[in-house]
Length: 74
Ligand SMILES: [Zn+2]
Image (cartoon, rainbow, N blue to C red; front, side):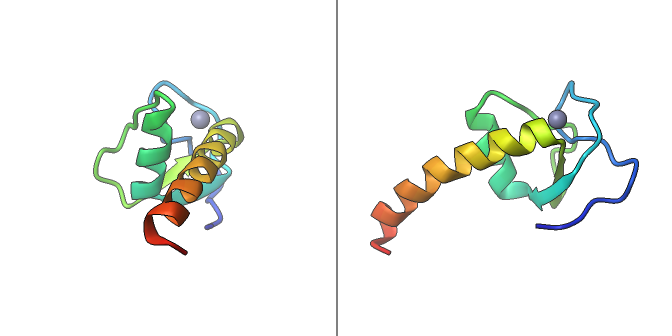
């Protein structure tokens, strides 16, 4: 997880909260689109998330991990 420059705004469309976390764009898209969110920057490599959306992201990636474990037999 990366730190975020001050003044960076959350990448979720319609959200103008201050970003507190930056995460891999692929993962963030997968996780947050599953939760009904879309992003301002469609081709950005990093996605910046405010606290609220980071929580959503974490929730969604937890779910995914279970699936991955099963899928890859880890
Ligand atoms: Zn947000």
